[in-house]
Amino acid sequence: MAVINARLHMLYIRWMISMAHPAWVIRLIMKGFPKRFSIARLSRWPIIGAIIEKALFENDDMICLPEDSSES
Image (tube, rainbow, N blue to C red; front, side, top):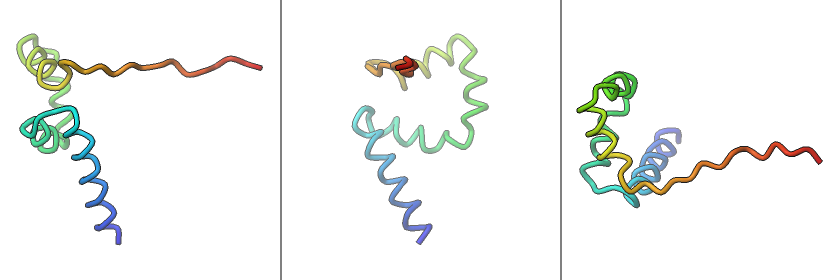
C-alpha cells in the first residue's frame, strides 16, 4: 500500500510541476532532487547560478505572504 501511495504522490508532484515547466525541466528536477544540496552549493557560482535561475524560476509569479501574527 505504501508503494502505491508513494507512486501516486510522485505522479501528483509531476502533474503540479508540469503545469509551470516544460517536460525537460521536470526530468531535470526529478533526477537532481537527490543531489539538491550539492546543486545548491554550485548555484553560488555566477554562471551556474544564472542557468539555474533561468531554468527554474524565470516567469515564476509566486508570492510569499507573511504569517498572520495579529493578536485579537
